[in-house]
Image 1: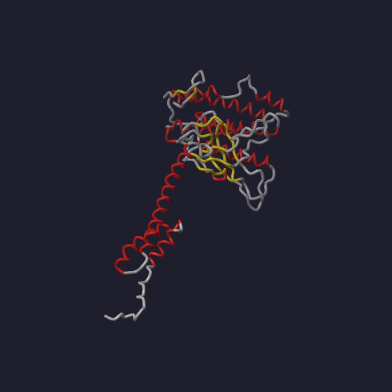
Image 2: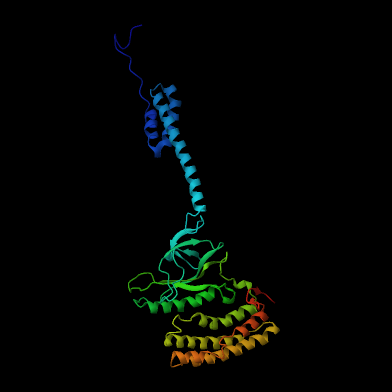
Length: 361
């Protein structure tokens, strides 16, 4: 039979497989190696049937793509294991995968956190305010240094450049939030109370949010300190509500009470008003056990007496006179009567040695 291509003319080669070429090229690109592996396998399956060239390219693409994919998988597995070990052995501020880095500006009411720096200002600082805003936000069901109990915005939209004025607003706004968060402050552990607030704010913008928290350098218990009102009966709830004005006045004590007459007398005035209001509310409580009537009445009488002392102190002309008027035979609080009232109502009280608590119905 005659040569259809003529004497001395070579037969034309079959076309090159595009899949084989694409397989090798893509396999050399790390991020596209899986696609190169797939195209190489497809090319090897199709080449015998379509007669195209490129089997060697397809084999190479499949081999290179498979090797790159295997290496990438190994790196991911090893890298993930190393990351887990890092987070478990101290990768964050507190070494836990459950924590996340943030700032004070990310904190919401109820959040537990650890500061990057000091939790409280050094003793003698003019105002108790954190200066390092970096924190580690963490679960409350593990030891934690601090917990936010509330946030609020500074009043008004005007500029405030006086840090003392902002601090006064912080104290005024944080105190009621504390009693919303933990109505029975008697049962809180030994904690400090503080807040973060801007040193100055403009009239046109800026963060005006005050964040209030309680904490201790030694760490809080492995639980949220938020209190559930459903844990108390009606009489106990009424008692805690009645004592709130007095407690809020007490917690509003200014840092300058020993050095600033105006701050001291203003606080004494709040104590007088808060004590009188609590005495009034205590006498109006209904539905408490008969055994509690006497102690609750005795507490109300004591608050009224203290209210008179505090009102006198609020009119003192000097700090020395303020101290003399405030001190009532060395017994300037109602803790004894309050202890008896709480005991009669079945609320927890410290034992006589002060080293524990007991609950008695």
